[in-house]
Image 1 (spheres, rainbow, N blue to C red):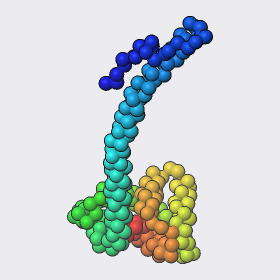
Image 2 (tube, rainbow, N blue to C red):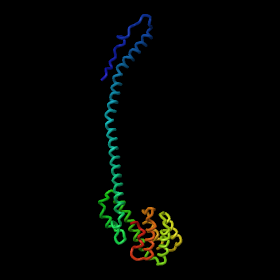
Image 3 (tube, helix red, strand yellow):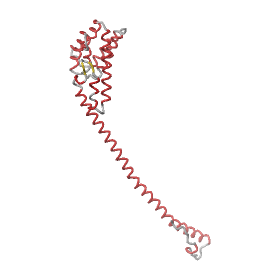
Image 4 (cartoon, rainbow, N blue to C red):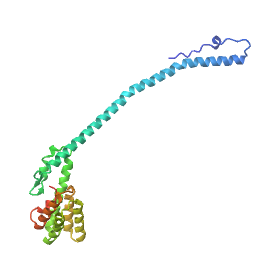
Length: 234
């Protein structure tokens, strides 16, 4: 602890000839303040040293937090890379219709059996094909409720676009909307179109569309089985 004993003023301040009592008192006060300042400086130095020590101790904590954030970012990046790898593998796997279709219908049992191949992305895959399966069921039911002439009407729209070589998916989707608008009192036709639009969500535009549209139109017009469901991506 710092020594706060103050040396008596009389021992440090000597009278100067010709100096008044007031001058001598001011001189003594200044000397005392100077001595106190010298004694307080070590305390200020000690406080400064403690601040430096605290900063030095805190730096490793800040470094540790930064390292943890880096590791967390690396883990997240690794997961995204793994997901991307799985998506590419799934795209290749499900490009083969036998891997997810049975007799032209989506087979969820087949899909569930490969969940271990896509551990990170399988929930999305399962949801996608479950939605498509429900759309297939809806389309099949709606198609059966349509007359042959109504099925032929729908099929002819797709067949015309296909024979014209239309490769833009939006053109087919727009034609589906026109069919619904032209037949506002036909709920079965509306259900069929809605189901087809679901199955077309993941179909990209391209050279394959004309052939897909023509084969789907033929299956819908001819009827029987699930031929009309060829509109679904395979």
